[in-house]
Amino acid sequence: MTHKTGRPPMYIEDNPDLTIHPFNCVPSNRPKGSWTNGVKAHSKDGSVSGWFYPPRLRNKGHHTRTGPKPRKTRGIVIQEEE
Image 1 (cartoon, rainbow, N blue to C red):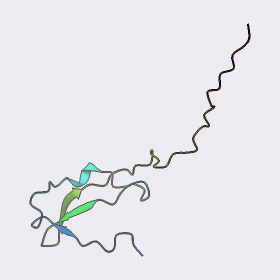
Image 2 (cartoon, rainbow, N blue to C red; image 1 turned 45 degrees about the horizontal axis):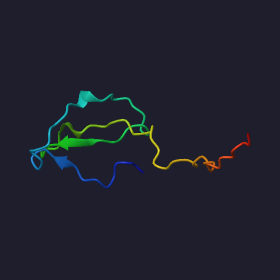
Image 3 (tube, one colour; image 1 turned 90 degrees about the vertical axis):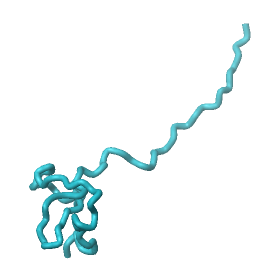
């Protein structure tokens, strides 16, 4: 089972408005889990000439949910007698 099934190839002739990035803009030896797959730019004759959307590092440094909120103490002010 491969992780790239289900997405048809995008062709250069069908998408003339998209820019084509070269293959050497990303490292060829990279771990699969920390990079996105990217979208290759195919031509109708079957050759691949670059990337429509090159692979990028995944956004791992942010979290959508915040942790528990700190308890706020109520502002009860006790006045000392003089």
